[in-house]
Image 1 (cartoon, one colour):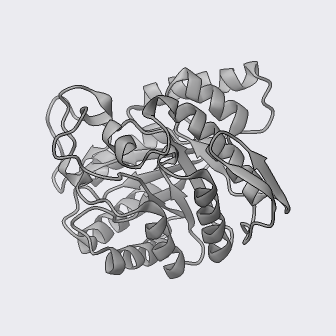
Image 2 (image 1 turned 45 degrees about the horizontal axis):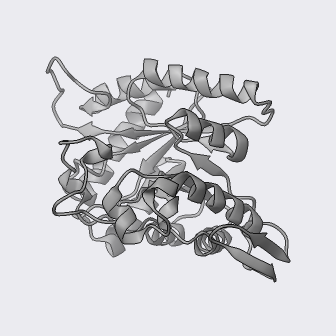
Length: 309
């Protein structure tokens, strides 16, 4: 089975968002990429309350300085494309008011003709929660549950009614509706989040940190789904964060998706063997500009397809 391939859009500080996002989106679709993806980083603290991913002493990468807002970025891409799916991986749901987020996703999907994928996560940054979170960091799981429930309600038939901790909708018409039910995919990297994934979501968005680790995680999720009586298949999209270099990486500690195109394709092939539906590649961090990003994306797509991925 040929794996669907996607590409991350240019959101980082070296890009001109208004010019480069439509340009890269249009070019990627013409290359054959079947989906386009964005992520969320709300701010870059000069003195962080915690390290990257909550790990003490681990610095935030400089690429996180000035990341464009995800749904604005997807809107630019939607206007420049016709076929590619438009996904978030991930949008940090508890940083957003649930009702307004549901409306934004619905409006974007209606405008794009039913191409949006809502990939959500709870995040890890205390600084982002202090600035934008609508509830404390410790309540992020409960907020995520409500975001999912509000989205399902708002995207469903009118009149919409809902009452939760944050949101109250008293029998109202809420339009526009999505062009089709928007799939909700969750990052779900721990057991609690995996239960939420199995019980409430349409699919899973893991990160590619090694094919063996991915296969083990996928088995855990499938076993949990069986235990909890889920019968609907889980959609799966793998995020890969590539560290591209023109020359092959020959050090002893090469990480997954680090190196030249051939090395990245080898890693794609290994991860594709796990059997997930789709893989998308984030190349924007190491590209100098949109032209280099497009060149590498085109070379990588051709090489991946030639390798049978």
